[in-house]
Image (cartoon, rainbow over all chains, first blue to last red; front, side, top):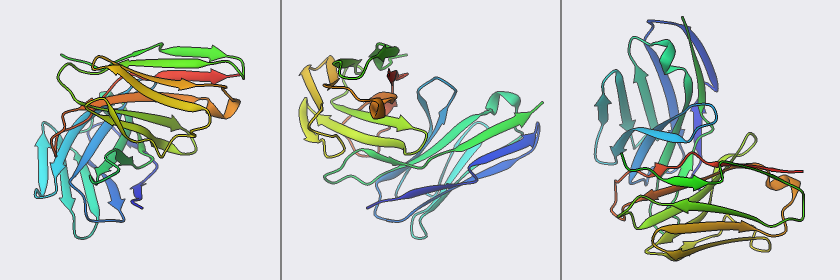
Length: 113
Length: 114
């Protein structure tokens, strides 16, 4: 059974810093990995999707990397802003009979002004 | 932008009552997922539909939960009878049945069973 772990569970940094969020998964047989952002009381917003054949994806100040063989992904946020404060969730899609996403429990990020 | 729409946004009811949550997937999406989010367990898959057919509902307590898609524009998740441990946020997501396509989530139904 696929398990996804996110470290750290919470992170608080001053505005302007670059930061890295970590995600690990136990079964490397995945189709893709997706990073989401969740604001309080809201649904999930997809930030980046990395296909299993890719090493990284970039969108603005966000860069996500994937090392499938070692079961790891990182989300890099450059020049953090208070508006980046949210919970960031990593999820893997393994396909097959259970086609839903398997989620980590998230990293709660606070960017201090 | 096309969005997944969930109703109601909030629901408070007493234990034993029937609860129905509704989801309108994005037009053209043929996969629909129901997830439940709690502080302890995080996000868990409850049910999955492809082309309106249920493919996986192994995450649901089947004695009280049921999920259906009466048509391509509506998915429902029912709990009968409801229990306090069902209190959670229930999310619906939809996607295109092509590998490596992202799932799009609604804003969820926040359910409280008293």
